[in-house]
Length: 92
Image 1: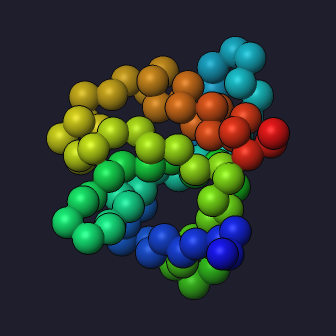
Image 2: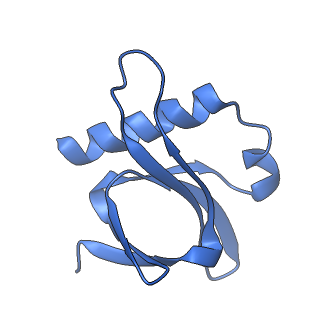
Image 3: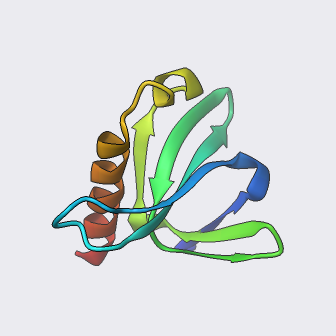
């Protein structure tokens, strides 16, 4: 099993940098994970982008919610908290 997976630019719905005290400055992407009939929203904090394709490391990935509608209800604090959590998951 590969430690990397690809996300296309069209599936990335947010890019950011954590700003809350104690999180440091971690860059992250929020993207739609399209699998079968699901479209879960995930956050990833370890990736490289080239030609519109994000190569992400699986260990730094975390589910945010089940739908784009649910994502729209999340606060920046909630998103950044999960982004920091995904970073810590991968750092273990």
